[in-house]
Image (cartoon, rainbow, N blue to C red; front, side, top):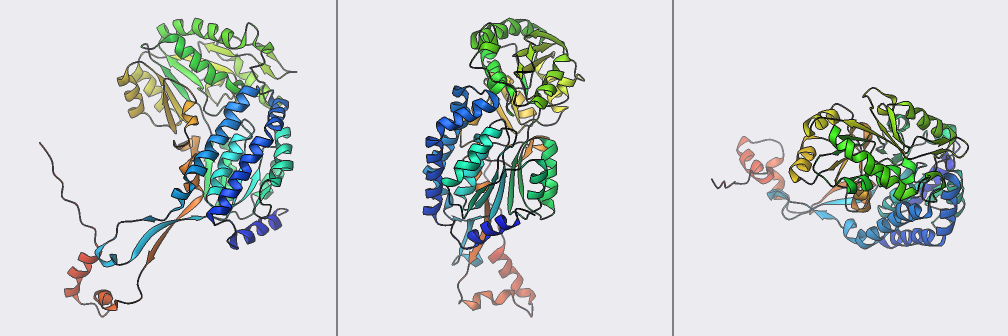
Length: 468
């Protein structure tokens, strides 16, 4: 493997213990913060060149989230690193039993193209905080960001312990042949399976942040204008290329009649009469992705938008109605500025529709009735859940983020990132003396010692008190 020497060098650095001290981890995290501050303009220019991403959206979804995650980690790392002492049985009362958060070693982080800074650096923050050495592989699809990260990030971090690798599909496949101690991947389910297969050869643990079709149920009891604004923002942010965007709306036929004019008004309010001319609406990242998303426009009937420009890779904010369950737009994650609306008769029908499909990365529900929100929350399963808004759960570092089933494996953000990249190492430190206390467990076995041994080692059920 062309990267074997690199991985070997990083493993030697990790084995030296260099990354373990708290001071070292804090220094590397502070250096990462300087990268974000000093290269802010370069990041804005690179994301604009790759996707014509609006600077405001870069600030909110790339820079601000990274800073928030970084500050949250810096504020709490000392507490997270402390050994967690656990409850002991009678036999070990005089000993020390605890869980130590050990770094895994050399980890690989493979980033995607849709949020190329956020989704590479937020896992990196957790990996550094946990004391690992890291190989980063930014997406080759966003070429300008890839070049920026590869050329400048290593100047801020310790090159003995952190490296950036630029690679296409074939080179990444060869990179995965190396033995890593942990792999963190964000991307499609199909590539996620490839990563997991490669990891299995070395029994390497993985986190897979994938995607799927995120449902958005809109009940009849809600403020239609507020729903339209929050759904449109979540769907059309970053031109729809967001893994947690609402992928389709479920609502009654009556609500659809109210929601359509509200969405039309909001889209004009957000992006003007011609969104193509708006500085606040991005573009599809590449020609192949453009062609895939454009083909989905043939599903159902176009109620709003639908205009495209292949040269600019522009697809207008689009709302589809009369969509059937077996239409192409309902067979894959859209990952573009298209919002299908499907009608259901009731909240129970919406729940049945959602549960008949793969579990999504996030589930959205809009309702002014708490019992409706509670019903959807309790009777469905998804990676995350958000009521009466979209995407905003991503702004809270203390909320774990991750999928379930086809939408992903594992979780991160805040303390969950630190724990993801840490091995929970069980430790019992016993005294060298007091040997007489161990005699009951040694051969030759004597049945009369068994009650004493059980009393010393078994956990007893606590007494319960029920107030009738």
